[in-house]
Length: 391
Ligand code: GLA
Image (cartoon, rainbow, N blue to C red; front, side, top):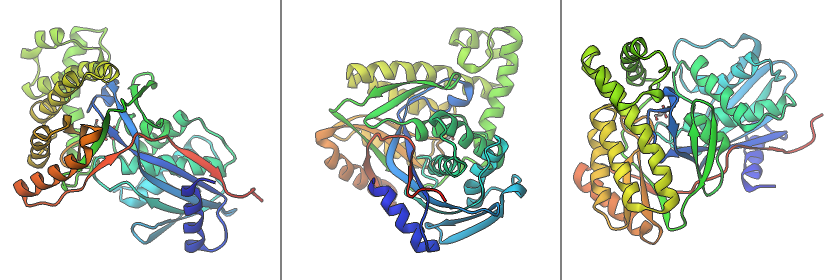
């Protein structure tokens, strides 16, 4: 049995006594490029990572859910049949939402005792919430006697975040967490949810650097970006009925409509259009091992996110500016929703340790803030293990 499953089984016994029946494990994600494009049905290029959430569960027969967070040392208890989206989503919404989504999909979980151990830093832009949702949908489905494909797990996990936590996120995080492949990134088409697995060149590693600034996708800014884009898209659709989403738009068409939409909507859509192109070009550069091009694309992405989408912050800009001056850095940009959280850095493998030290020092010198800079490995998607036969 995998080590994570043994650990999850032990954590369950320590928390509740007795034995768990199932364990599940799902990664956070790092996004290489293709930021704020998923809800425009565009392309994204994330990888599941080796920072992960593990859960273990034992079925109950009374329709009650008892879920303990080992990170917070808190517990929530709820009756499955009574679950309704809360007015404000706190950690409880993220652990109950998956069971609401399973119930809405007609998948009958009998009730359960569950421990959750989150190993993805919270609020760091590495999708701690998606890893929790994906692991819980997976274990919930197992308790219901269902073997769901990873993509279905991702869909339900996103449904939990959209419908129960009231966060209008796109498909990227849950898809990466559920469908990841060791040593690979996923070029994901967010319109069709089809993806290509692209091997990470052995010469490069991924490094994430934490600004220490915490953001919440549940905050108003994330939803505001979507509203500003929607205003511009109303103008676009009226002019070009064949354009359903920003993903279908070209810069030529957008420029032609510039005077007819609010300036801010134009800039937001310019990001969506150019970022989609950068994402596809970055996939090609990664496959060719063309570091110079990849570096330029990552820089262009950060710049566009900072200027056009306005989702960067001083600390992320400092991390990116410092990183590109350090030996071995192929490219750097903010990753995830922005407003804080982590940057992603593509770094020559042989320089990774020195790069991490130098970046941490540079960031501290310039901001007075500590940071965690670490190598993350592209990892597998969700897995579920049966710990003992169900009675
Ligand atoms: C968050 C959301 C994703 C995506 C990114 C930005 O991580 O959950 O769906 O929109 O922001 O690319």
